[in-house]
Amino acid sequence: MNFDTYTFFLIILSGFMFIWSFRYFSHSQSKISDFEYVGFSSFWGVIILGIYGWLTKSHPEQLQILISNPFAAGVVLSCLGFLMGLIFGRIFRPIRRVFFR
Image (cartoon, rainbow, N blue to C red; front, side, top):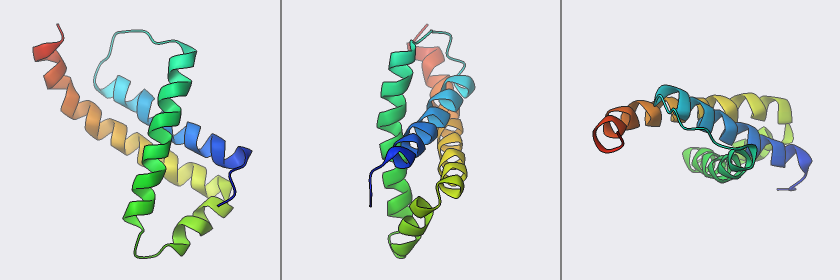
């Protein structure tokens, strides 16, 4: 896998979708800076790419095909990030009400 600018932005984009949807669906009121958004997006983007690789481990060529088309990869990984943020945000919302008042 060639790590170039497209791949970097795919990681950031999918991580950003995770962070944004998690904060939206968990009703987070705290503000975070742009630097924190980039850091969290990078971290979660790598996790999302790893999860996609794990989900397609029986067909490893699908990951290479996805990365070779940055437009399709952007859509697929962003949707995966959004869905993960939705799920974790909905799970975290009642926990936040109890422990983080």
